[in-house]
Length: 185
Image (cartoon, rainbow, N blue to C red; front, side, top):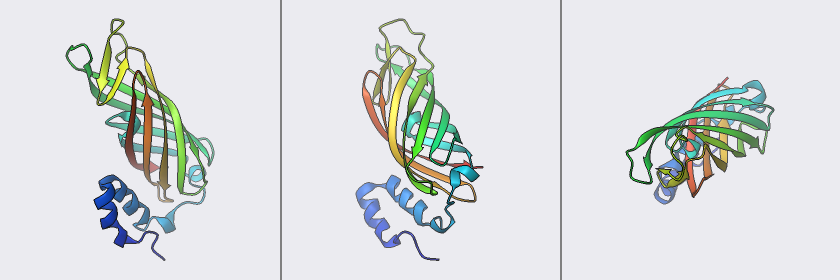
């Protein structure tokens, strides 16, 4: 069984690109490559994962269902503290991203693109107000559009790792990278 990733490059990657990409390379090469499923989304169509950053802004729980080896639908649930742009106290905001995934390969290690809408719960404010989540500012309407690119690793034993970069558009645009760790079944 050969190695998939030359581990001597990890210190250089860590120094240049940080922890996020180092974890991705480590995950891809730590014995996962020989165990990647050849038809992963047909044999393991459901997945549950914990998402950090990305579509869910901070963190969230994601449930997905493969439609084929090249397509899937997913929904996530996230809670974040939003600060009012007009100086009102912060309040809990529930985000519900719904996404369509298109995989560019039917292998267990596959690039993908996704797009969808993130529904925002605190939309009952009086007109003209807006809220701020990190660097993203959104007005009091109920959804934000998002799209992104990423890489998914899905093993035959069910391990799931996904790294992605997401662009979210509301009244401003935000770009965030995130990752998912989970289980496919």
